[in-house]
Length: 250
Image 1 (cartoon, one colour):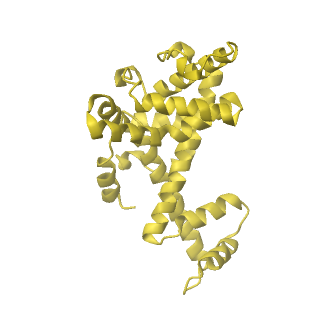
Image 2 (tube, rainbow, N blue to C red):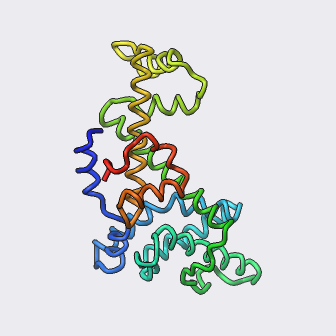
Protein backbone atom coordinates (compact mmCIF):
# COMPACT_ATOMS: atom_id res chain seq x y z
CA UNK A 1 0.00 0.00 0.00
CA UNK A 2 1.37 3.45 -0.91
CA UNK A 3 2.13 5.78 2.01
CA UNK A 4 -0.20 8.53 0.73
CA UNK A 5 -3.02 6.01 0.29
CA UNK A 6 -2.51 4.66 3.78
CA UNK A 7 -2.65 8.13 5.33
CA UNK A 8 -5.78 9.02 3.40
CA UNK A 9 -7.56 5.86 4.51
CA UNK A 10 -6.46 6.24 8.12
CA UNK A 11 -7.74 9.82 8.20
CA UNK A 12 -11.26 8.50 7.56
CA UNK A 13 -11.27 6.24 10.58
CA UNK A 14 -13.75 7.09 13.34
CA UNK A 15 -12.10 6.46 16.68
CA UNK A 16 -13.84 4.24 19.18
CA UNK A 17 -14.38 7.18 21.53
CA UNK A 18 -16.14 9.16 18.81
CA UNK A 19 -18.31 6.12 18.22
CA UNK A 20 -19.02 5.84 21.95
CA UNK A 21 -20.08 9.49 22.02
CA UNK A 22 -22.42 8.94 19.06
CA UNK A 23 -23.87 5.85 20.75
CA UNK A 24 -24.70 7.64 23.99
CA UNK A 25 -25.15 11.30 23.05
CA UNK A 26 -26.68 10.89 19.60
CA UNK A 27 -30.34 10.39 18.94
CA UNK A 28 -32.52 8.06 16.92
CA UNK A 29 -30.96 6.13 14.04
CA UNK A 30 -27.50 7.65 14.53
CA UNK A 31 -27.20 6.41 18.11
CA UNK A 32 -28.65 2.99 17.24
CA UNK A 33 -26.21 2.58 14.34
CA UNK A 34 -23.26 3.57 16.54
CA UNK A 35 -24.28 1.02 19.18
CA UNK A 36 -24.53 -1.70 16.56
CA UNK A 37 -21.03 -0.81 15.37
CA UNK A 38 -19.70 -1.03 18.93
CA UNK A 39 -21.23 -4.48 19.37
CA UNK A 40 -19.82 -5.64 16.03
CA UNK A 41 -16.43 -4.22 16.89
CA UNK A 42 -16.09 -5.82 20.31
CA UNK A 43 -18.18 -8.98 20.10
CA UNK A 44 -15.27 -11.24 19.15
CA UNK A 45 -13.06 -10.14 22.02
CA UNK A 46 -15.92 -10.10 24.54
CA UNK A 47 -17.21 -13.57 23.72
CA UNK A 48 -13.69 -15.03 23.60
CA UNK A 49 -12.95 -13.59 27.04
CA UNK A 50 -16.22 -14.84 28.54
CA UNK A 51 -15.64 -18.33 27.17
CA UNK A 52 -12.14 -18.41 28.61
CA UNK A 53 -13.27 -17.05 31.98
CA UNK A 54 -16.24 -19.42 32.39
CA UNK A 55 -15.18 -22.49 30.41
CA UNK A 56 -18.84 -23.04 29.52
CA UNK A 57 -20.12 -22.18 26.01
CA UNK A 58 -23.74 -21.87 27.17
CA UNK A 59 -22.83 -19.56 30.04
CA UNK A 60 -20.57 -17.52 27.76
CA UNK A 61 -23.40 -17.13 25.24
CA UNK A 62 -25.79 -16.08 28.01
CA UNK A 63 -23.45 -13.46 29.40
CA UNK A 64 -22.52 -12.20 25.95
CA UNK A 65 -26.20 -11.60 25.18
CA UNK A 66 -26.47 -9.62 28.41
CA UNK A 67 -23.31 -7.70 27.57
CA UNK A 68 -24.60 -6.89 24.07
CA UNK A 69 -27.97 -5.81 25.47
CA UNK A 70 -26.37 -3.43 27.94
CA UNK A 71 -24.05 -2.04 25.29
CA UNK A 72 -26.97 -1.57 22.91
CA UNK A 73 -29.14 0.24 25.44
CA UNK A 74 -26.35 2.64 26.44
CA UNK A 75 -25.19 1.33 29.82
CA UNK A 76 -21.61 2.33 29.02
CA UNK A 77 -22.37 6.04 29.08
CA UNK A 78 -19.91 6.47 31.98
CA UNK A 79 -16.99 5.55 29.70
CA UNK A 80 -14.60 8.50 29.68
CA UNK A 81 -11.49 8.82 27.46
CA UNK A 82 -9.79 10.78 30.24
CA UNK A 83 -9.85 7.67 32.42
CA UNK A 84 -8.09 5.32 30.02
CA UNK A 85 -8.62 3.11 26.99
CA UNK A 86 -12.13 2.03 26.08
CA UNK A 87 -10.96 -1.58 25.83
CA UNK A 88 -9.82 -1.25 29.45
CA UNK A 89 -13.28 -0.06 30.46
CA UNK A 90 -14.84 -2.98 28.61
CA UNK A 91 -12.46 -5.43 30.23
CA UNK A 92 -13.39 -4.33 33.73
CA UNK A 93 -17.09 -4.34 32.82
CA UNK A 94 -16.78 -7.94 31.62
CA UNK A 95 -14.88 -8.96 34.74
CA UNK A 96 -17.67 -7.52 36.87
CA UNK A 97 -20.26 -9.28 34.75
CA UNK A 98 -18.53 -12.63 35.26
CA UNK A 99 -18.26 -12.04 39.00
CA UNK A 100 -21.94 -11.22 39.23
CA UNK A 101 -22.75 -14.35 37.25
CA UNK A 102 -20.76 -16.47 39.70
CA UNK A 103 -22.57 -14.86 42.60
CA UNK A 104 -25.88 -15.64 40.91
CA UNK A 105 -24.90 -19.28 40.62
CA UNK A 106 -24.68 -19.31 44.40
CA UNK A 107 -28.16 -17.83 44.72
CA UNK A 108 -30.58 -20.28 43.13
CA UNK A 109 -33.56 -18.89 41.29
CA UNK A 110 -32.27 -15.37 40.59
CA UNK A 111 -32.60 -14.54 36.84
CA UNK A 112 -29.59 -12.98 35.17
CA UNK A 113 -31.53 -9.89 34.11
CA UNK A 114 -32.41 -9.10 37.74
CA UNK A 115 -28.79 -8.78 38.79
CA UNK A 116 -27.69 -5.26 39.61
CA UNK A 117 -25.38 -3.85 36.93
CA UNK A 118 -22.09 -2.99 38.58
CA UNK A 119 -20.25 0.04 37.18
CA UNK A 120 -16.75 -0.79 36.01
CA UNK A 121 -14.06 -0.25 38.64
CA UNK A 122 -10.36 -0.58 38.10
CA UNK A 123 -10.10 -2.60 41.34
CA UNK A 124 -11.55 -5.54 39.41
CA UNK A 125 -8.60 -5.76 37.05
CA UNK A 126 -6.39 -8.38 38.69
CA UNK A 127 -3.41 -9.82 36.87
CA UNK A 128 -4.97 -13.11 35.76
CA UNK A 129 -8.08 -11.48 34.32
CA UNK A 130 -5.99 -8.75 32.74
CA UNK A 131 -3.90 -11.32 30.88
CA UNK A 132 -7.00 -13.23 29.80
CA UNK A 133 -8.53 -10.05 28.40
CA UNK A 134 -5.32 -9.01 26.64
CA UNK A 135 -5.13 -12.45 25.01
CA UNK A 136 -8.77 -12.18 23.92
CA UNK A 137 -8.24 -8.70 22.55
CA UNK A 138 -5.05 -9.70 20.76
CA UNK A 139 -6.78 -12.64 19.05
CA UNK A 140 -9.68 -10.36 18.16
CA UNK A 141 -7.38 -7.86 16.43
CA UNK A 142 -5.51 -10.60 14.57
CA UNK A 143 -8.79 -12.17 13.45
CA UNK A 144 -10.03 -8.83 12.12
CA UNK A 145 -6.71 -8.30 10.34
CA UNK A 146 -6.95 -11.68 8.60
CA UNK A 147 -10.49 -10.84 7.54
CA UNK A 148 -9.33 -7.49 6.16
CA UNK A 149 -6.49 -9.19 4.27
CA UNK A 150 -8.92 -11.68 2.76
CA UNK A 151 -11.24 -8.86 1.70
CA UNK A 152 -8.27 -7.06 0.17
CA UNK A 153 -7.44 -10.16 -1.86
CA UNK A 154 -11.02 -10.42 -3.11
CA UNK A 155 -11.03 -6.78 -4.20
CA UNK A 156 -7.58 -6.54 -5.76
CA UNK A 157 -6.85 -10.10 -6.87
CA UNK A 158 -3.48 -9.99 -5.11
CA UNK A 159 -3.25 -13.35 -3.27
CA UNK A 160 -1.75 -11.96 -0.07
CA UNK A 161 -4.10 -13.89 2.20
CA UNK A 162 -3.58 -17.14 0.29
CA UNK A 163 0.20 -17.01 0.41
CA UNK A 164 0.45 -15.80 4.00
CA UNK A 165 -1.97 -18.37 5.38
CA UNK A 166 -0.08 -21.15 3.61
CA UNK A 167 3.19 -19.85 5.02
CA UNK A 168 1.76 -19.70 8.56
CA UNK A 169 0.44 -23.24 8.27
CA UNK A 170 3.65 -24.59 6.72
CA UNK A 171 6.54 -22.86 8.47
CA UNK A 172 9.13 -25.14 6.88
CA UNK A 173 7.86 -24.62 3.33
CA UNK A 174 10.43 -23.53 0.77
CA UNK A 175 9.88 -20.95 -1.95
CA UNK A 176 9.34 -23.83 -4.34
CA UNK A 177 6.65 -25.25 -2.06
CA UNK A 178 4.93 -21.87 -1.88
CA UNK A 179 5.02 -21.43 -5.63
CA UNK A 180 3.61 -24.92 -6.12
CA UNK A 181 0.78 -24.19 -3.70
CA UNK A 182 -0.08 -20.92 -5.43
CA UNK A 183 -0.15 -22.61 -8.81
CA UNK A 184 -2.36 -25.44 -7.54
CA UNK A 185 -4.73 -23.18 -5.60
CA UNK A 186 -5.05 -20.32 -8.08
CA UNK A 187 -4.37 -21.93 -11.47
CA UNK A 188 -2.83 -18.73 -12.91
CA UNK A 189 -2.25 -18.32 -16.64
CA UNK A 190 1.38 -17.56 -15.85
CA UNK A 191 2.71 -19.94 -13.19
CA UNK A 192 4.31 -18.53 -10.07
CA UNK A 193 8.07 -18.90 -9.89
CA UNK A 194 10.10 -19.24 -6.70
CA UNK A 195 11.34 -15.66 -6.99
CA UNK A 196 7.85 -14.30 -7.56
CA UNK A 197 6.51 -16.32 -4.63
CA UNK A 198 9.17 -14.90 -2.30
CA UNK A 199 8.36 -11.35 -3.37
CA UNK A 200 4.64 -11.98 -2.95
CA UNK A 201 5.17 -13.34 0.56
CA UNK A 202 7.24 -10.29 1.49
CA UNK A 203 4.53 -7.92 0.24
CA UNK A 204 1.84 -9.96 2.01
CA UNK A 205 3.66 -9.62 5.31
CA UNK A 206 3.93 -5.88 4.80
CA UNK A 207 0.24 -5.57 3.96
CA UNK A 208 -0.71 -7.64 7.01
CA UNK A 209 1.42 -5.38 9.21
CA UNK A 210 -0.23 -2.26 7.77
CA UNK A 211 -3.71 -3.68 8.32
CA UNK A 212 -2.86 -4.74 11.86
CA UNK A 213 -1.54 -1.28 12.72
CA UNK A 214 -4.74 0.17 11.32
CA UNK A 215 -6.86 -2.17 13.46
CA UNK A 216 -4.94 -1.25 16.61
CA UNK A 217 -5.08 2.45 15.80
CA UNK A 218 -8.80 2.24 15.09
CA UNK A 219 -9.36 0.78 18.58
CA UNK A 220 -7.47 3.57 20.36
CA UNK A 221 -8.38 7.02 21.55
CA UNK A 222 -4.80 8.22 20.98
CA UNK A 223 -2.89 8.27 17.72
CA UNK A 224 0.63 9.45 18.49
CA UNK A 225 3.39 7.15 17.21
CA UNK A 226 4.66 6.55 20.75
CA UNK A 227 1.26 5.57 22.11
CA UNK A 228 0.52 3.37 19.13
CA UNK A 229 3.84 1.59 19.48
CA UNK A 230 3.29 1.14 23.23
CA UNK A 231 -0.10 -0.42 22.53
CA UNK A 232 1.42 -2.85 20.04
CA UNK A 233 4.08 -3.83 22.56
CA UNK A 234 1.57 -4.29 25.40
CA UNK A 235 -0.58 -6.52 23.19
CA UNK A 236 2.50 -8.48 22.04
CA UNK A 237 1.80 -7.53 18.43
CA UNK A 238 4.88 -5.42 17.84
CA UNK A 239 6.78 -8.32 16.27
CA UNK A 240 4.26 -8.38 13.41
CA UNK A 241 5.09 -4.76 12.59
CA UNK A 242 8.76 -4.57 13.52
CA UNK A 243 9.88 -3.86 9.95
CA UNK A 244 7.30 -1.10 9.44
CA UNK A 245 7.84 2.54 10.27
CA UNK A 246 4.83 3.27 12.45
CA UNK A 247 5.37 7.02 12.14
CA UNK A 248 4.69 6.74 8.43
CA UNK A 249 1.36 5.10 9.12
CA UNK A 250 0.00 8.24 10.87
